[in-house]
Image (tube, rainbow, N blue to C red; front, side, top):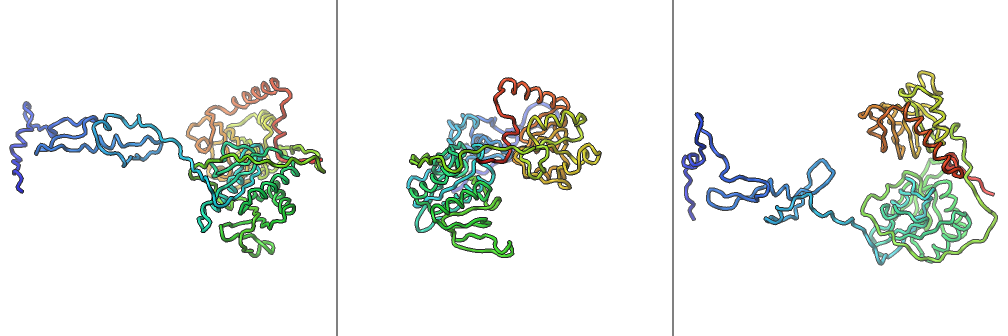
Length: 424
């Protein structure tokens, strides 16, 4: 098969644009706009327009790098619809209808929300359930209050139980274990979770391994002999996992289907009630505080700062500049050369965010910052930021708290939500 030989001089003369002293040429024979998918080649064949196809294949995404849908096949009707009008796919939910075995996770869920340690427990349970074996696929069952975030953290089933009484919760959990026959039951090795795990082991007679530092489907490792040795074992039915020993679940959302289960209701026993006993937040060590409000170089009115810390029920802290100036005690310094926080919330007032200071708040779950500099490092670290003068923000917050307190006089003070428990 022979092709006609092209005459480059003739093609160039055909594209010459008349007028002007210097010769000018029209490089494209047809205009290639976004809506046109092809043009004609010198042989009369349709030519693809890769730019128009890439525009159609573009997937709307907040990511900086472009993402293309390679499943798209060309067509005039497809090109006519811009990428921005694509229908977003429904969120994927993983469902396990007939699990071969169950893994029961019992988080603390203090205040009706999952703590980082609770999420790690669910992540470890998810790993055990997803470990494929001869038995097949397993499912994770969460025992606790109704949590909207249960599915996001890998729970396939949910046993809703709201009673906080220790004896009632132990009896209900033992009944749930007897009914479901889970392969493993995971607890957080925390003051509440560890106590609950040991009570369940004593009442049910099941074997338990506590202070677990490494866990897989075939092996559990815990320290022994004052942490000079390791004890390796086959995972028993009850497991209490230490903090930061497993990663939270970050994969596909799971169903978190409620399980209708009749659980026993305990009568009043030796523990007739309990209530939170808040500590003095102002005297707490920074490493033990759950809510810290810190002053930086942008704070000059320390009377208002301490009043705000008291009103919020927070532990006061400071940056190194403030402590070096003698405006706050040295034990209130936050940062690599001060205290490393393990708090739930950190409220930074007038702090720019030096690298050493950011090291001190690296493990904080929520950071709120007030600074006049939009590009400050602390503003970038914060999940919620106020770009304003901290000296003006403090009295505004105090006024808002006073208004809220007057509108709801019976509401408990913020300090009442601090850790601590008293039983009677």
